[in-house]
Image (cartoon, rainbow, N blue to C red):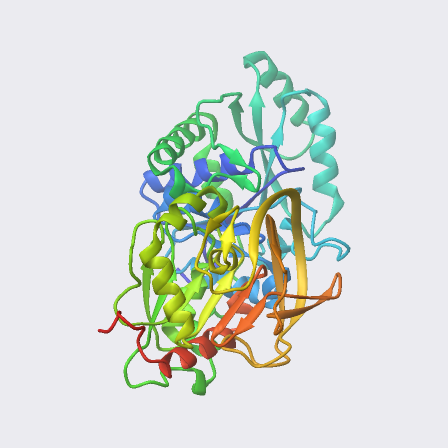
Length: 465
């Protein structure tokens, strides 16, 4: 099969809360259990849903964000992630037509569906309606003629009689019903202030939840019809994204020996894009994961460090109790080795988080608040640093309920240019720490620069090979 003809579906909804994640994850698991190689994808910057997708399919959950990465990269990133798959399923974000604020369709589920030339299956919360469901679907089907709304899955159906009424109404809509799922709270995916609880925090329960979702989907959805629909897609003319080709020659394998980049993971640091590790490896690094909740030292020979996002506030006492690792991180930063920290990583490098001592790399204190900071940002690097050359422009995403005081150092990480103008984050020696989540596939030079800086760095004290 030509890679551009990978069977694919986009799972969307009229609004948040209709059950997209429930249905998308259940479909992924059900098709994977049937023996298909399923490639999971998520529209937007969300890190948590892809963890459930990965659990359901055994493949990395990948994000497709047209704001962060640009529309031209969506199909190439999709083809890269879906290589070798029998079926690709893309879970949408918010409502089908909801995009980046004030930017029309940009980064909406509908926008991504058009870029992928993929049919859309709409998940409708039918719990408080009967005939009205047909009017709702008709509106969504006719709103944008370039979006192919090819089927509906009715969710939260109350009874056999309720399903009959819904199906009778849908008969006149011209959009086929491809599934009907009963109201059922058994397969719960618990939530927190930023969304679902990540898989890494509830692994055994998540496995059971995904299995239950698969069973519900098998019982309530027409899998054969869904697969047949997925196979009606046209070929994508794009070339798959290639992390090695994205890097300039000077950014690839500059060192005779691969520098070791340690990447934080585990339950406290679950927010990461799969392409970041791929870009680090393409740039010539050896990538070594570690868990700050369990490992008392950095991987032997560490020459650079990446600490992404997550929920460190939930684990502040345990992170603080791991004093040997906090000291090792501080020593690595003091040595001048490159350290890239985003959001949770920024908090971990601070002096304290909710009064619990952290690594003390940054002269700042962090604490939880009730206020959610959320949204897309545009930013520019104000000076040369281990991650970005001066003038490098990026698009990123903020997503946190914490504050850092002060919010920026003498040398800020970024100057935000939209939707507001302010400086943010810290640059000190080799450290680049910020609240901003950036997708490196949009600016591969970030990975190349970090690896080149690590190649020039001596292994951390006490962590020699």
